[in-house]
Image 1 (cartoon, rainbow, N blue to C red):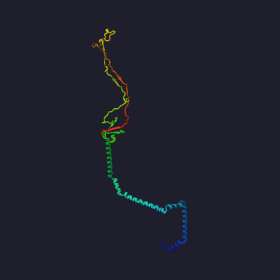
Image 2: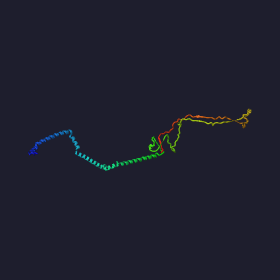
Image 3: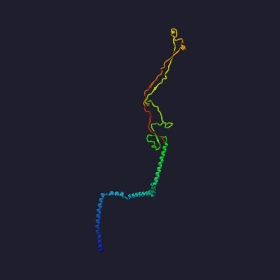
Image 4: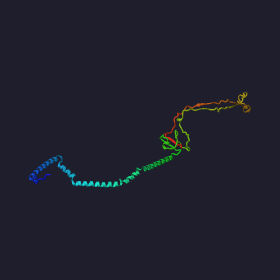
Length: 273
């Protein structure tokens, strides 16, 4: 390697340190700085008005404002950190979670509780059936506007439907019959015929006496003096003729109209067993 010549070094140092040289370089730098300053000034006057920028900086970058907001954020972060820490210590504890999962999702637990629910449902169904059995024992009557057989509705019993009958409260059940008072208009058209007997047959007798015409003259009675002589009394009977027969027929009457009291129809059954 070639050693550096001392004179050459001194010459260069003098040259670099020469005032004129320094001034020239300083002027060059100043000119460049001034040009850059003018360019940036013009640019910021258009792109970013200094008043507007200052206002924004005063508002957004004010140290006090920034410090206050920073403290608020720190406080919220600290509070949230504490809250989540305490919460997750309880809620997210692996033992607690595992215990809940073991309890809630364990198949045996689910099966047992399902069985208990089924048992409860069975008990409720049984109670409902017993209540209905009590309300509708054998011999009871079930009425409804619905034509569905009560065996289907209630789920028990054999039922016989009552049709075209009115219910009559009597001393004994299952008896039939009945009558009702009706008017002439409710009677069917009809006639009446009849024949009389001959019990009117009878006879009469008259007493007759002889007259003595030889003595029938002025001054004498018309009747014989023997008027009261029983031997001379003669009875002459009349001929029977009272027997007779009458046949008669009445004029048709009645219209045959249906006779029913006001009613509303229902479906009715009684429980046989």
